[in-house]
Image 1: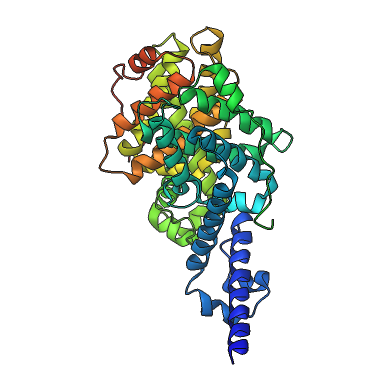
Image 2: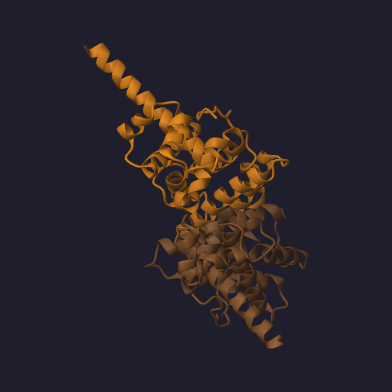
Length: 212
Length: 212
């Protein structure tokens, strides 16, 4: 009995995950305006199963973005766990997220599709950037007059950088990211030399976590 | 004969302008996915006249965005005509565009709808920002290591600021804009005092040009 329930539950969860992945794929391809039938075909699940999990397409697409953000947040936490310095945590997160656009194009396009609204989200990079910037200022590592203004600039740079990396496939993405990182560190009150050094520290290896 | 031709031409142009305005309104309202019939109803023109001007809805929406950008460019040129200093022209343009989001919400939402792609456009703020930043660096007014990185940050800040101004209707938009402007000037190599002064200079009056 328990075994059967568990198996049924597992199958249900697998169907939901297939639908969410299909939603992410369609967002990444800019094809959200398709019938539910197409979504279930992309997910390779039965047409009827859609409504066991989602009432509308919008609900699926929201789940697709939310789960991508949740995953991004967990990955960021793992990447910065070894750092005590909030300034280092901030810039390492920025530089690693910048490298995800080419490594995980589906995740990248799902997140970019939400555009500016993402900067106001309680998940993913935005709340972590806010926390790290506050701590780094309190610790005297960063120096800037207004947190909200700096967050607008950092969020905008994050978004626009992702777009530029997709638009310029011939350019070295790591170089593009680290140059913007260096600019942001100068904006945050570091000297030219400090900014150059911190923006080019060795990064830990990036483990793909999204199955692109 | 000439008179009649002119009158017919004028009527045709008026129909096109009504369609473009309707396109801009629908973009601003996030309602682009409507039938052609709805577009002609919003424009208050005959259903058949749509296809005298545009082959597809996409073509209309592209024209709607392009014309908004063209207008923004002309307005920016007029606003900065009296300035010799490219640094002043750059920051005045940024500050005045920032004030348009509340003054001309339809123009603002049309432009924000294009999102990051706008930063690569040959019309509007982007090419003027590039030109002014280059000149200001050559003149020794600004100091930054890499133009492309700075443009990514400026474009991202412009976009995200527009979004933040719409999302926070209770906040003073001019204050929000000028604080971000001050941050950007520090990023561009100005001292704290120089940045604060230049970001708070008196602006010329803003004449609405978009008929919001």
